[in-house]
Length: 90
Image (cartoon, rainbow, N blue to C red; front, side, top):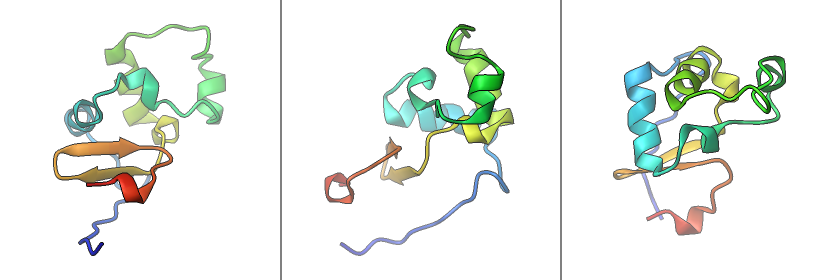
């Protein structure tokens, strides 16, 4: 499979809130499902016990990109997050 790949380091070039919301919509998942639980900010903010609204989570994830599961792979209008089997990308 040959694909044009555009890479982006969202630590150096962070997502805007609007942009990240679009990506979340493309995954078909809730913001909480895109949280990287091993990130130190996850522990510092005690997100395990400190329940946040989707809106609050999005703001935190934009502010602290380490909280976002990676990689994020966007193919057509679908976003895949985390460990992705490239054979399943269509």
